Each structure stands twice: as C-alpha cells, then as structure tokens.
Image (cartoon, rainbow, N blue to C red; front, side, top):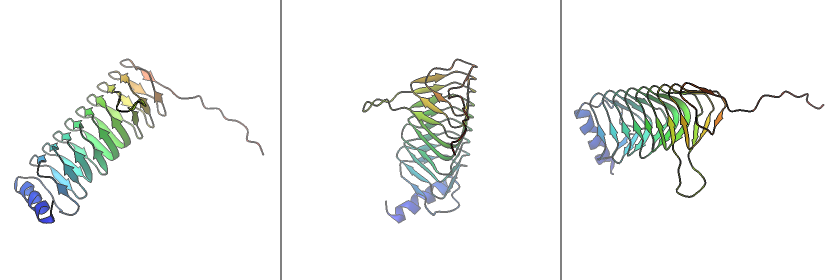
Amino acid sequence: MTNTDRLAIIDRHIAAGVEIPCYDGIIIEETVSIAPGTRILPGTILRGSTVIGKDCEINNVQAEDAVIGDGCAVGPWVHLRPGTVLGQNLRVGNFVEIKNSAIGDGTKISHLSYIGDAQFGRDVNVGCGLAVANYGGVKGVKHRTEVGDGAFIGCNNSIVAPVSIGTGAYTGAGSVITEDVPDGMLAIARARQVNKIRNA
C-alpha cells in the first residue's frame, strides 16, 4: 500500500462518518469496514476482514480479521488476532492480546492480559494479569476456556485450559485454575504463605 493509497482510504472513512482526527500512524486496509460514529486514534493498524461497529473508540490497536461490536473502547496497545469477536459496550484496555476468542457484551478486560481460544460471557470482570494457557504441548492442539456471564476473574490468574468457569463464579487473586469452577462458587488455587526466619 502506498502512502497515497493509505490516505485515500482514510479519507473515504472520514467522508462516511468515521472520526479520524490525525492521520499519523494509521493503516486501514481496503477490506476493513468501520461504522459511522467510531473514532480511530493514532497507532491503529486494521487489516484483513476486520469489522468495527458504531460509536467505538479505537486507540493504538492492531487488529486482523477481528470483529468489534458497537460502543466498544479498545486500546491503547491492544492486539486483536484473527478470530477475535468482541460484543457490544465492552472495554479492552492497555496491553491486552486476544486470539480466536469471543468476548460477551459489557465485559471488561482492562489491562495486561492474554486470552486465547476462549468464550467469555456477558459482564465478566477480568482483573489485571490474566493468562489463558491454551496450548497443550502438542503441535497444533489448542484447548478452549469458557467463562460464564457475570464471572469475576481475580488479578494475576492463570487459567489452564480446558476449563469452564461458571456463571457468577469468582477466582481469587494469584490463582492457577486447572479445574472447572461451578456457578456462583469462589475458587482459590494458590499455596499458603509461609514466613521463615532469614539466616544471618
């Protein structure tokens, strides 16, 4: 894509009602669809069959073959890899990577997380530092994680797929979740703290 082509594509989106206040660092491929009322901020790269709904704010996001629903706030420094489908009115914040996953309406993944091969329900709250361990060690084999509506994922969690976390369930901060969590239950999976006298 030449710079002339890049600017022409941006101009077409602006003419169609997309707000792009600055051209710097923005690349939008011809195949991308953006609804009116959405705001695209610098550092954003949109590739492939990416589709973005109306009234979103997209800030320093790289997205390829992803779908972003209406009213979403995504960024800064977010990477949406192929197969990502974001619902409506949700938040994906600083330093989050999502791959081949569907995220339900109203869910918040605010910062420092990796989510791969997963299905998250509506209104899930994801604490800082979630890592979904989706690779089972055999080449090409990825396991899936399911998180129910209204679940709360604690800070610094690892979810070792395949795992299902139920509707309204909670996971404690610092937990490594390796088994299913039933609806409404609190799962705590961490070693008990031990304080020992230091040798001089």
